[in-house]
Image: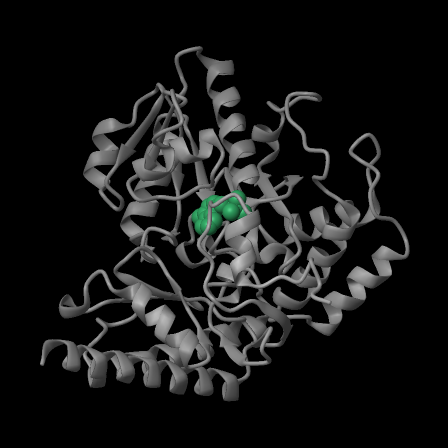
Length: 410
Ligand code: PLP
């Protein structure tokens, strides 16, 4: 008899709210940088669950951390604190500029906490000091506040009135920031590498100017490191490349290596505006999540591992640039560490999704960052052999597309 609960990709269209359009294959197992689907086909993972699976799939040390915690304590709420949360907070503080940590469950929630904090900080000094300055094409999450601070109207539109007091400026435009910021600004919110916006790095001059202008106007500088944090760029946090310290920073995605957890980190002085009851989260600081994240930071905050990110980045950039030159699909690769954007060439503009689909046919999973940029965010410890095999499959996928294109034109 047919199992009435057997599921395939087609089930998605019957049972899920249609917020996503997942690809055709359904993965059932992962190990390191490889995935297997329901049919047993194997894929090299260059997507890392959108820059989340820092240590690949089912890393033995993360499994041990999760299993040990699963036998000890799962959940107690924030009416009580717990040891994994306190240890993780200590480790994050020791490794960054921060003095205080607030735990939650996703990047959007971490930014929601950050934006509420900066607003409280501003209006405590002057009721009119509530302007948040953010940047075009920035992405900060999907809550109503975070889509509003995000710089893409396509995400914030269609939900009725959105929170006000938010100004968007062109990214990397120092003059625009200088002429807009004032004593009524409570915060400037920056992604050091715009991830969803096309893997675009902030310039050093822009980041340094943002710090200087925030200081001048007593505004807080917020770095959204949801996508760039936890070693993704070859430093524990991307701000460490710039030598510019924020007042508030958010971290998620890689923090739990695939287990949902996020954090908002800030300085002592700033933290004091969020008094008991002013913000919270039932699951924030959950012992299971914190135990896994503690294992992640123990592994990732290591000079040899971070050097390995830079080496892998070079190898991957060189190989993809080579594909781009030979096949004519790509412009030179940009990004930092293992968060790489591969812009489509003029002739292939708007067709990044086709590369992802062809990649899946050839057994490699990549991402897009908008219609014009292919995005690669593999595990930070992807073995050289898997990296090379993934590149070989991507090359074959590109060759297929070029061939199909010739036939279509002929
Ligand atoms: N901020 C940045 C920079 C992101 O890239 C993302 C997700 O892509 C978010 C925030 C939102 O994170 P989440 O989807 O975990 O809410």
